[in-house]
Image: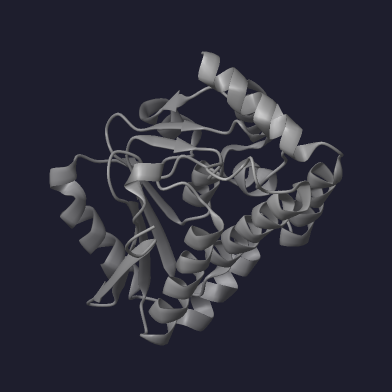
Length: 244
């Protein structure tokens, strides 16, 4: 595949990481996850105070990349998903402020990526869904419950249906809805707020305000992945989604 999986820029202390696979809906494959991790390394080394995640094209991130599902094994697929969880944990605990700006479809692991950030800005028309439980996946449930509460998290996860930006804001998943024309102002405000605190303080605040231990989410994910037939469940889910 030509080009970089992530395009990153740094200006005035703001590192913007663009997921750059619009032809794949910016889905999270192994290359994308590694590229985000490397871009975060670069942002931290360059002294960024605010990290912004965005998606090129129509969709922020449509979840797990299943382009090579026919050729991967259960073990390879499980390892790929565990690495996504480790990336989400890293973003959730970064010693700087994080922001996701999402439009279009924000689904599955893409919705978990969105939920891992401090500021979660949606463009009009964005929709959010957590369909992973449909194929037995338990990913990021503690983080989601920490944002929206146990009851709402259960409803979102059990239903798996898309939720519009307005409803997502009402339950606390989205912190702000803004038109494209208003993004510069929202980013400037986030940058000003992020520059108030040093990295040590931000890291301490992130550590003390995480509702659930990362190890608990990782253990729940590992148990869900250990069930036999992971790939078959994903294939069945994809076939059913295609028929809809």
